[in-house]
Amino acid sequence: MRPAAGRQLRAGPVAYAVLALFTAGSLFPLVWTAVAASRDNARLARTPPPLWFGDRLLENLGTAWSDANMGLALLNTTFVAGTVALGTVLFCTIAGFAFAKLRFRLKNVLLSLTVGTMMVPPQLSVVPLFMVVAGLGWTDRLQTVVLPTLVSAFGVFFMRQYLVEALPTELIEAARVDGASSWRVVWHIVFPVARPAMAVLGMLSFVQAWNDFFWPVIALTQENPTVQVALTGLGRGYVPDQAVVMAGALLGTLPLLLAFALFGRQIVGGIMRGAVKG
Image 1 (cartoon, one colour):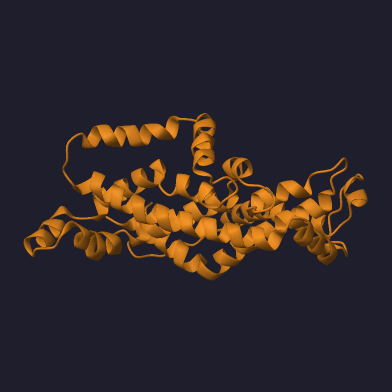
Image 2 (image 1 turned 180 degrees about the vertical axis):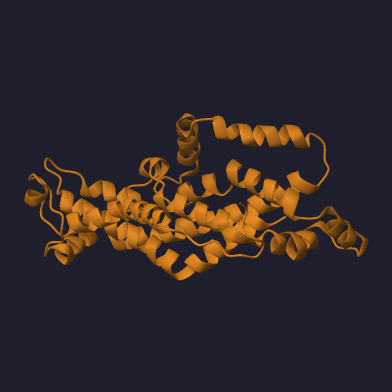
């Protein structure tokens, strides 16, 4: 029997149990990282592993901070992730609007080629990309990891799909009748309408850029690292100190948790508005 219109559905005990189980499973890796970061290497090697916090958390965090040059790494990663997220949102929204609402030759062909690049493994482009970077003299510089990721095929397709449904063609035509240029249409119509999808794309791009490892570890060194590159320096040696490695991973994760704690409501609100749009 279908519920009456307007009646609020309530979760039962089974739903709460399932949610609690999934929440515990999601939090376990983070909790275990903190537990391991508070122990020493010898205790982590014993069986059974520790299940509660030790007394070496601050010591291991300090060691990871100094050994991995974590201060510079966090600054570099914040700059890289913020720039990539901003560029991806801006360029992908403009390109998505063009593919969704503008008319030009070979539009479907270009869209198919753009989406088709998602099928190409990124490992195939590493050698030519590094040759270009080396030729420009950009090795071990932050623009090396920023510029190749300012636009993503996923972002273009994502914004295109959103704007097809969320942006009425009549609204664009009315702005054209009033004499608005293409850039004015983008600034005053497209960006406000696409704000929920832009928030989601920006969040996804920021997290992906923050956690990116494959290309930064090739293009950067320990003298000018991002967080993921800096963490590779903690695992070196004949017997890596796993507790310090876990402490470094915890340091690299805390800024993301802080950002979500501060802007989580806005991010979730943008996702929900985008889900019910149109």
